[in-house]
Length: 429
Image (cartoon, rainbow, N blue to C red; front, side, top):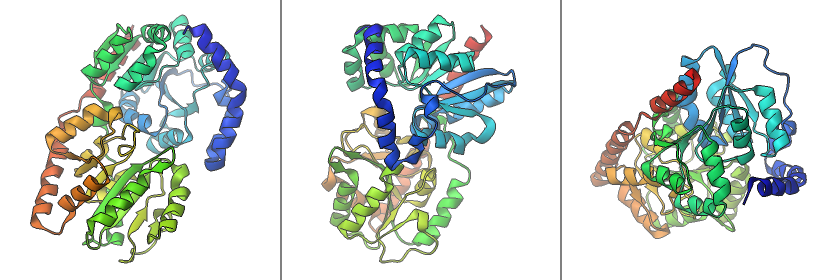
């Protein structure tokens, strides 16, 4: 595929994007807002005359991963304006929660030439940063044409994604080599990018290891634990997801019925806020006694089995409140979610077999003793019993995994410093 064909296909799809936004807006009203930005129309230009450093963080995961880098940029380049672009409303909301007014935030426009040109004309960044694996080929080409340095930072590429890009090898090769530099999370990621023809690659590590848990998370977690009951064992199913007609909540509930752990309280936190009501309805239909975190204002009854985490920005609080955490997106073929946050909170981790999005971090966590792999529902039930039984042996297992989790995350830090070195070299040139 050539970029001309790619652009032609985007123009064919462009008239349907309002329909897509309206449909998404049914479940998440924020999708009905700021449409102009998605087509390259923005509010009044920045009049501070500050040079702009621009980072693109698609959604929640990329925005959280960028936190240490953004904070380092704010500290080292106070004379610059930091602008974050997003694709999802949840990514934008996360940016606001993390950085407030210290940065500006907009939606990145669709990757059609006229919208990309409007974006670059409006902001005129002195440097751009794409997080993880965001290859927008017209955006990359336009930055190249304007001599705007564009870096791909914290880059990751699974085997599955590499095979997909190989089907459009010429387009991917052009895009990768139009980037100023590529800094991959691991050597394996770098090699997969090189298999697509990338020449300007290095290995920087994973920014997620440099994310510091919010200082208030532990206190909020302790307060939540008071409402749950100090002596109740607490299991957290974090970032659960759905795929086609299946959902991970079904698997979690099946495992719980097989464990028979007395007085167990399970916190279920769906990955996407648009699923909060859906999961609540599912729990009701299945006959489970549950309470929603958004309405919690008193001690949870001992008859309540489930706390539904239907709030945004509180995942670290849930980690602080639990004894064992399962990382969602891994029992279904969705590639898994971020395992590092739970380990940074010193929590024993369980994770399913589908972890291609975080394969290196998952392998390191398992090898270090911080995490256990669960193959299926039955295995999840066994591992829960193994870690949450009311025995000294289970307590000791959790304590050992907790210690290993902290050591694992501390041993992998340093990506922010390496990313800042790359950015500094570009900004000085």
